[in-house]
Length: 415
Image 1 (cartoon, one colour):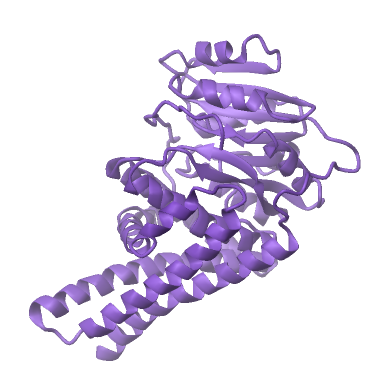
Image 2 (cartoon, helix red, strand yellow):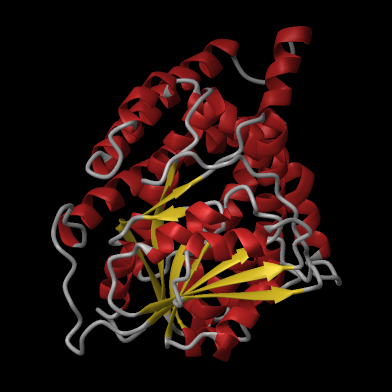
């Protein structure tokens, strides 16, 4: 029994160090080979193709104007903007039209029924006039050059089906928001840089992503039963033989949850969605013809196992303190905590250095670096146990997922 506990604790201790080392190495390699901050976007050989921008919206009156204006102000020669109004009960449609100020590049497609984000995006792909389709959220605002960087990246390889943009947090007041600034840089940014080196970015997220329209339609579009429809679509594109990439210079400002309740709801949905994706596709990923996805699948499964083991180790630590049980040494646990803080600080330092050309506010959030891993690991572990394991067992729901997300009015228009 003691040996089993020691193995569990060793896995909990070593796994984050290994993954941090991989992400750090991947981030450095991507910067050296793929990323040139400040370099102008290169026009594709055939010129700039047309792009359709999709903005799904449900009761987004408070934020939709900023998103629409930012999209229409894009420095790109040929594009249209489609606001996909998913049966809003507020003035989302009128606010979007007013924000466009008569710009004919905007169309509002209003559905009187709230069918869900995935279903509206499928309508958008079907009604889009261009072969390249960009998806973004209603509470975001794109950088004027974001489309050019995304198009240049997707046109650089015939095997790419999607390219993920780089989200940056805009609502930065408070500890929770500051920690999510760190998360966007130290976790999301480094992971996507590393995955992009293999051509298999695990999520072309709805916050900002560019797709080949015909390739998305060929795999069936978004699945409305999935809690995280963007992850599931990305995995189906990869399973179909296409690749995905990351473009860190394609900036988009986004809101993040500013309350613990909202953050918890978000992480539960993410955990549930990851579990549904694993349940739906893991058997197919295990086949030899999809061996190029083994690393992505292994990382997803290992992360789930790790958060479960982390929860177990915390219970054992409490038992050790309260009842003096032989479930590991408190001193060893304290030493591990210090070591993890050091590793996290190194990772954060590199991540902030990589993102500094795009977002110079990140440096101030470094003061939260030592406590950042503990808080978000605990939240992730609890959400995984609460939702991901259940979703892994049950799979996606039979009914479609609808959405109603409270928004804070946007005051800034620059990512």
